[in-house]
Each structure stands twice: as structure tokens, then as C-alpha cells.
Length: 322
Image (cartoon, rainbow, N blue to C red; front, side):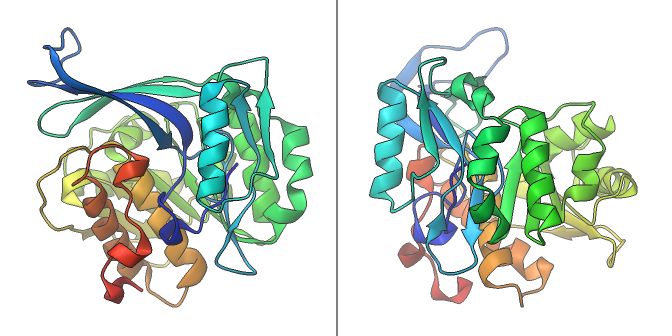
């Protein structure tokens, strides 16, 4: 887990993963990729568990200050893991609960990006899957004091559910992102999530419905709401997102501005991280306003190459976002 004061740091969301990214000429295909133009090694900050997210467990928006709170993280005892820990330190993120193991390599992701900025990602979870109950217990005090916790599925689902339960039972606002999605998701994920946020592909896997438009997303959101969710958000990339809640049961489309994408990798992380930031530090805003601002920040991220490297600093964003 690795917390984040989303906007103050480079990662609006943080999925702790080292990644290799390719720039491919031509369209992406499941059968073949034409010769690549560039190859880069970079750090992809992925989410995992709840305080804000890391490819190990999660992230926390601390209740006491704007500084990120430490969250459990498992990385390998290898160069990727050491680089990741150093990267956290350089971004003023605590490594108190960051552990290196010799039993698995650091989680990695190979990313292929075409000229239109679309991507295909191959994930090797590695040390992410070794995060365990004892790791959570060590961070329990920090988790229970958080304002917001983000959970997802790049660690073992049982551990993510345990962290979500821990946070929810202590009054911490929970934001769950079912990525990567699994069709037979434990029903408790729906009821323990204050905000359930998925993209169109994840919505399709979870509901069995095709999602290609805001109207489709609204139908999928209704299905998810029936499973016990309090708030459902379905992100649609360039089409923005659709929101639905127990208090506003009619699906509402929140569009986003049109931009020319360079690399869409990590846009969902950027959106979720920004949303967690607003939930923690601007709770007076309406959910619709939070989503509009999160859409904007995600749109900024797709206009630069890379994942973590594409996330803007707060100082580089318009003042009216804050």
C-alpha cells in the first residue's frame, strides 16, 4: 500500500509497478504488432489497496495533513523494487510499510502503445500477490485514521477485501476500483464500497452487458447498484464518465473535453487518484463537480507519454481545480 496526496505528488493515483512501454507503429492487434518506434523503461504507479493505491495494497489520504500516509507494499528484492522505494522517497511518500521480499520479483507491466495513444498491457503481479494479513495489521492504525482508502485487484482479492473491510468498519471512506476485473467478484466488494468506480471493460465483465456508450454505461451502473453499491461510476475514456447513486438513482453522463491523446496508459489511475483527492480534501463539492475535475485531470495525463511521468503536479494545473 502506498498513500498519496494525489495532487501534491506526481501520481494522482499510484499503482506501484515498474513497467516497460513500447511505442508501436500502426494499430494494435491481438495477432500482430508492426515494428515499434521506441522502447522505454519507466515507473508505472498502479493502485492496489486502499489509501490511494499501489501495486501492493493501497493508498491512504491521511486525515491529519496533506502528506501521504504509509500503506503496505510488497516489492521484490531486485533493482525494480529498490528503484521503486527510492522513487517513493523522492516524492515524499513514507516507506514505513514497504517490504522487499526474496520470494518473488517486483510486479511489472509491459505496455504497448500505438500512434493513437491506445494501449495493451501485460501484467506480471509478482510480489504484489505476497501482501498478506500480517502486513495489513502492521498498518492498521494508519489505515483506520485515513480519510479515503482506495482498493483494487492487483493484489490477492481476499487481502484487498480485508483492507476494505478494515477501513469501512472504522468510518474511512472507501473507493473501490475492480481492476483487473473478475466476473465472480465477491458480493461484499459492492456493499463495502462507498464509491465503486470501474471502466467500460470492467463494467462489461462484471455485468455481462456490452458497454459502448453513456447509455450502455448507465444500464450497467444500474445492475451494479442493485448489488448493493452506494455510488457507481463508469469511466468511458474520451466520452467522460457516467455516475449513479442511491440518492440520485438516474444515470447521469459527465462528458470531458476533447484532447489529442499521446498515451492513454494510466488515465484511469489518474482519474481515480484525483477523485480520491477531492473526496478527502474537498468533501463539500458535489460528486458531479468532483467527477468533472477528475475528468479534466485524466485528460491532462493522456496528453503526455508514460504513466507516472504523465501525471501533473498540482502547481501545473489550473487554480480553479482547487
